[in-house]
Each structure stands twice: as structure tokens, then as C-alpha cells.
Image 1 (cartoon, rainbow over the protein chains, first blue to last red):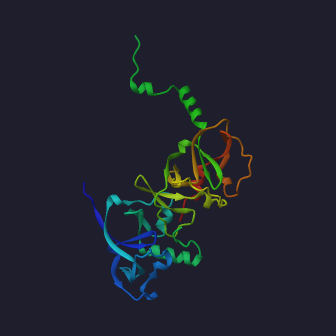
Image 2: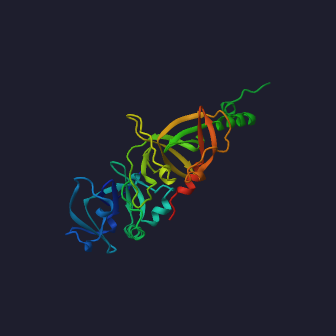
Length: 135
Length: 171
């Protein structure tokens, strides 16, 4: 049996790992941390205690960018560690760019499709609810 | 000459026996508490009862979907009936050294872990299901199908299918 693996850049936020396919990433660079460096994920999802660094910007091939001080770890993800989103929220998740779930060392992480994910953040900001922070 | 039944035939009950077995099954209920409300679920609806381990929050999700948990290595959404039905927070303290628990059940092709304050186990009813005599919290009403006596206590019969259909996240 052949095991396939794909590169994922994991953004290690508080209680939450967001994974972007390395195929979607144009560059990861140190930045000063202004709004011009992309959507601030830390403000939205928090940072893990003691595991953060200087701000970095992950620029996507589409031109959009994500900004975080959290650790960014690039890993290979094997097929057997990748799951479909459970039917209970699959349709909802797809609309928000949460496309797959990956098994991680502790718990799971979400593989995102950056554009619909960012659009989902914007929609929720406009509605002023559903803050998405860990419960 | 009489023929010896083979093993498969021995396991297949006659229709009247099967009906009797079903009737017995209907008298047993999986009893559990959520936010101080005692609920009963048909045991056939439940896959298993689990201790809750690590909960991974789902970004952008409503608060009643607490996250995903690992059930035999697979991700399953953890749902809070208390939060969904806006039940008053009367959560019992977990017993010492006992992690919080959930009932994993499948309805309409969707597997969900339902957070419970306490799982009493499978109890046998001393009577039939009857219309509920207690006032229901407003948010819970659509998912209750009567009440049943399990031992000395009354439990509300919980319609898991209706709950999942109502709580599932749609785009």
C-alpha cells in the first residue's frame, strides 16, 4: 500500500491548529505586524502560552495574507491522518473553508482553504457574533 | 426423520420471539442527566458511552458545538444540549477522578457526541411511555416525546433524531 503525504503549514494558535497546504503558500516572512501584513489571527483565536515569537506573515498565492506570532510549523501529513469533516457540520464547514480534519499529536487540526476561511471571518465580524474563540 | 438445525438456524428467532425481544428492548432506556434534566434515550440509538478527552474547538462555530473529540481515533463533533436548548446552568460536579462523559450516537447518518453531566446506564422502565406531566424548558420541548418511570425516578424521553436534525450545522 502506498502512503501519500502532502505538505502543510500549521499555525499553532491557542487550542487550535490551522493548516494551510504548502501549495497555497507563496512565502512566510518576518514582518512588523501591521494590518498591511494580513488578517490578524492572534487577535481572533489567541496565542498559546509561551509559544509565540515575532510576527510573521503567510502570504498566499492568491495574494491574501495571514498574520500571526504563533509558531508556524511545516509538516508532511499522511493520508491516514486526514479525515473528512463529519456530516453533522460538513456543509457548514465547507462554506467557511474548513475542508478537512487532520490528526495531530494532541487532538486535531483543521485544514483550511484560505479564501473562504477569510471570507467567513469577515462575515462573522460583520454580524458581530460567533466569535470563534475557544470555548 | 428429523433434521438437526444448523448454527445459523438456531440463532434466527421465530417471528413471535423476535417481537417479544423487541418489546423487552423497548422497556430498557439509556438514562442520563443534562443540566439537571433527567433524560432517557432508546439504547439502540446509542453507539457508546465515552469519557471526554481533549476537545479541539471548531473555529467560527456556534457555542453549543463545543468542538471535536477523538472517538476510536476518528473526529466526532461534541455537542452541548444544555447550550443548544438554553438550559439553566445546573451542571453537576463530576465525580472525583471521573472525567466528563458523553454519549456517542448516530442519527440521520450523523454521528455526534452528546455531553452529559451523568450517565446512569441502561435502566428498565416500570411502565409505558406517557405524556410528560412536568413543565419543560422551552428549548427542550421539541425533543421530548413523553416521560417514563425508571426505578423511582421520572425521565423525559429524548428524541435524538429530532435533536440532530435541528442542531446540525447548515451553511
